[in-house]
Image 1 (cartoon, rainbow, N blue to C red):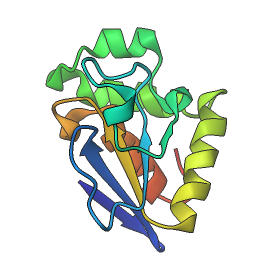
Image 2 (image 1 turned 135 degrees about the vertical axis):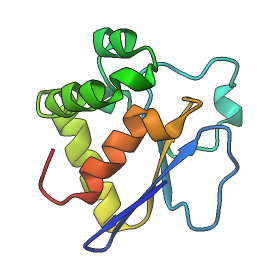
Image 3 (image 1 turned 45 degrees about the vertical axis):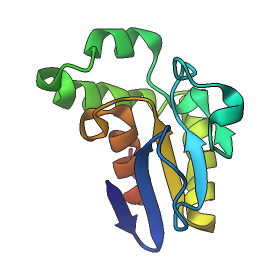
Image 4 (image 1 turned 120 degrees about the horizontal axis):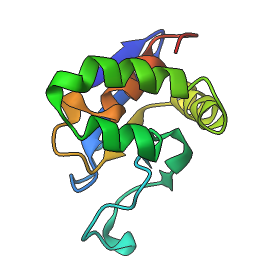
Length: 127
């Protein structure tokens, strides 16, 4: 999944996928460290857990595709409040400096917080 707006390129990939030459900065955006993945084996540049959905929202969603639209709405609202807002500003600055790849352990990236986050980052000035 890719998002592109005004020179900002944001990709979403699974954390276990190998680095591609055009990935740029790879940031893990999950609140919890991926199960079964040693930190030494994760090819990432940073881990920014504060930008992930709250534990309560993540548990409510439960990766249920029927809840995705409501999940995305609630997650966007969480991104307006601290500490997520500061983490989002950090990601915006990273994306403005060059390609950004958001990493997640979620199996279905198309119905994940990382996809919502990529859309937010690719849409200048909106959350």
